[in-house]
Length: 146
Image (cartoon, rainbow, N blue to C red):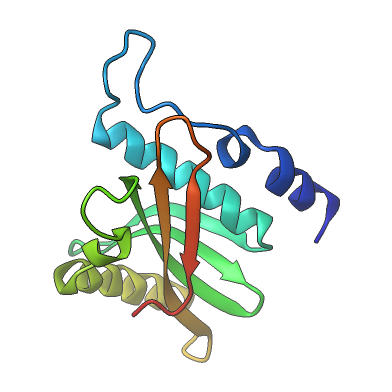
């Protein structure tokens, strides 16, 4: 691991500090804001793990979407990020249902079409980010999730 990746992994506040789920006035943070924070945390984790982030929030014609496109060695990784408050009801991965998977597949097909390289290795990954008020985020990277 390179020095910069080590520093990000060990010291970046989004990965290593307690997170507050309330704003300065004590109001709970809106779920859309939590999703944005979760995507930042996921990108930092992937970078710290050695991945190169190629694109974020890719929207393809026809409704396909990918949160993060990254390179993991010689493999292209289409990453879906799911952020939740700590185990509200189920694992974040369970929210990546068949309908969501089809949107991600559509986005991946559009991305691969842009590359014009049919021989590239690729896979679908999911990053779960679980936030508990006052604790460090729990991050799980699931390679080849579907």
